[in-house]
Amino acid sequence: MPQLDGLRALAMMGVIYHHWLPASWRYHFPTEAGLFFFFVLSGFLMTLGLLRDQKSHDFLAILRRFHLKRLVRIYPSYYCALGIAALFGVCEIRQSPAWWLFNQQNFLILKLGYWPPGISHFWTLAVEQQYYLFWPLLILLCPRKLLVLVLLLLTLVSPVTRYFSTGGAWLSLDLIPWGLLDDFALGSLLAVAKHRGVMPSCRIVDLSGLFALTAYAFLYISWEMHHSIPLWCHAQQTFLAIAFAALIARAAEGRCGPISRLLEHRWLVSLGQWSYGIYLFHNLAPFFVGKIFWFLWNPSLPSHMAHLLRLPCFALVTAALTWSCRKWVEMPTQRFFSRRHDSKRN
Image (cartoon, rainbow, N blue to C red; front, side, top):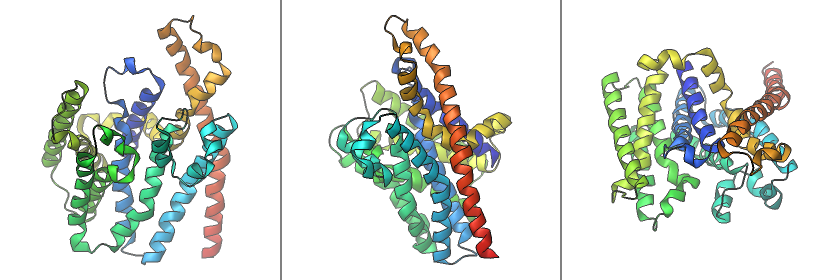
């Protein structure tokens, strides 16, 4: 699915833009929306893989295969990033190591009440890992006839939770798993439709995606202008998830229309395939550059010039850390487990 890799790259670029550039340069554009694309995509790919494995493997074998694959793919690089951050003096890791080691940092950040510099983006990894614990059980144990209904009901949990939260606190619900159920559930619904061969027509997908995107944009702009729409404002993220699900539906079939060639460009596809490592290290880069090239934060430098000078430094540090981690941590770990797996089969 090369177009999905292209979408990963574009989503990653939006996240980088959000973290590397000042808020005044975003012009109120929701650059962080790419984060939620990854949640919808995770729900889609995770559920699709589980449903396919269900045909040829027993329950315990599927769970073992599922968790081993993610253990090898995610944790070596993640712990490498944590170790580097702690080595460079990120105090939040040293003060509360267990929260970070066992993927509970989303709750820790809620407890702290601020975003720890350099590592705040790890909250998304915590939510992902928490879903990896129970989502396979839901997909595999739920009766086949009830799965769609259950996923539809779970989609409603997030907006309902936002509605019953106090004041504007519902915005912080992104940090807790049940605040993101709509993303994972909608991605899973798409996977069920694809697995069962009942994908809606391109016209229906396009119309639903366009309607959802329009609704999201209207609610987002209303909120930005401090005129949020009562009741409907709590469905803002759900509409965004529907729009992303429609986009993923198109990309999974390799049918993204006029942007297909862009999404399949080899550089963009390659960037998407490296997106996990880039995501791990991109937010650490400003932290490191600030310690090494401290003069780039000199108040005497014009603000716009300072930002432009920092960007190539951020990019070089991110690329170096991502490449080094892949070469000396990720790939050796994968080769080790691959050899073990082959020896057991023989």
